Image (cartoon, rainbow, N blue to C red; front, side, top):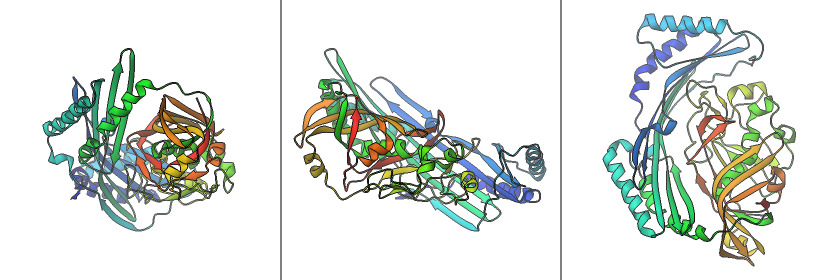
Length: 473
């Protein structure tokens, strides 16, 4: 394993950032500063096109200062750190004057607790991206592309994409001095097949807190994605109705994310936009359901040492034995509700506001065996390959899209494929109908999550297989 190095940029600017905090403390009762340096690449190879771009939309470099006085917070972001005392004094004056112009009571909060804390985290990967040149990476991806096309003559397009980002952040306040440096990577294999006038596409994702070892991981999944794409050529539309279903870990992750993810982000409670606010301590799922979220809860793309407000990562039990127990919070929503922050204060970038955001969201494993779950289904479907999802936290409606499913008849999986699959319903009904939970546990983190239609952050989700009753169409 290779240790992820610190950001030279942040190490150079950190003393100036600490001086800025010290100077602002003369005027404000609380001061903190976050410095970020996120740099990455995205590589894409298809049959005829090869491309390389910066960051895949995740790259950023800059700073944000948060100050507090007389019940009010104020934030100031910038990307040019002063390099001499005169410039630092000018920035201090600018922040102080800008904060003094804030008026009204919309931003009144209790003062945060700033406890002494000094920690540094360096992630480890098997293959640092900087050790391979672009030509070497592209060559390995082209080899994957060729292998996919060689699996079947029905393949008309094969694409391979890999993204990675090195995330470095520092957080300083009167009592805190925190650093973190780590890589995450995600990748897709996509196969498009055609027979006569029928065309189908299927993709498989890979992700984790890793470097370019993800390329070797992709090699193990390419035959499956092509073979299953070919099987989809005979897929029929999903007959609308209510069925016993077994959801794969990939599908379970989407359900967990959409069912009680956004709905328990505590800033939604303050805005009265989440039904869950009125159901704390009440049953909302089957007694065998346990649901967690937290950057510390498992190791995946949304894991970190501390969030963008300097709070250590946590592991929040959202649902325990079917009972809704807790939500996830940023520092300000937690303060407004009289709670401790859960380490879920996240920003899309240094220049964006911190919100309560999911990290690694999942349903915990149970004790059932997948083969027994399948045998228990008289007629239903094994749902796989999550595509997307939507929820309505105010009314608990849910809609999840899946690429495909396989029909189960008399306890056996058949080759009768249906595609696409749409699951809709009322969240508590779906979760209370869960009767079996497997002892498997898998995660996926190849996508991102938006707050509404914006504010994207990296997330992951997953879990075991579950058996439930659901409406498909």
